[in-house]
Image (tube, rainbow, N blue to C red; front, side, top):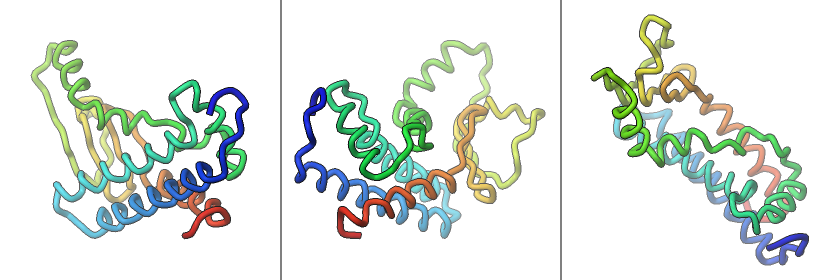
Length: 173
């Protein structure tokens, strides 16, 4: 869809149905995350939530110039604000491009400190240097952090659920 060209009804329904499907994937991963203490399952669930959320984000906020009007159309149709929490794919990018993050870290630091995949219910303090922890997750606060940046996974899931609810008029639940 380029310019002001109208989105075809079949494409509209297919994309909205995909939003519902991705929201279901995230919900399944969130349930698994809440019911496991196995570190591999925790990180697999988090990654699944991030990927599903990013897939919804790409439908509603496409990167390709020729698809921008499609995103605007669907956001308007579903009543989703332009600055919705899901429009930011920073955390998904940290995980998807983790190889680049490691390389950049090693090249730019004079430290041999490398801490990753921390699962800890305690808040990171200034003394613990949270920027040194590449990926960490607090299962109590549902906070995912990457080198001192944090995102509330519960808030992400809540926004995804709101968008999924708005899709029910257009697609099967």
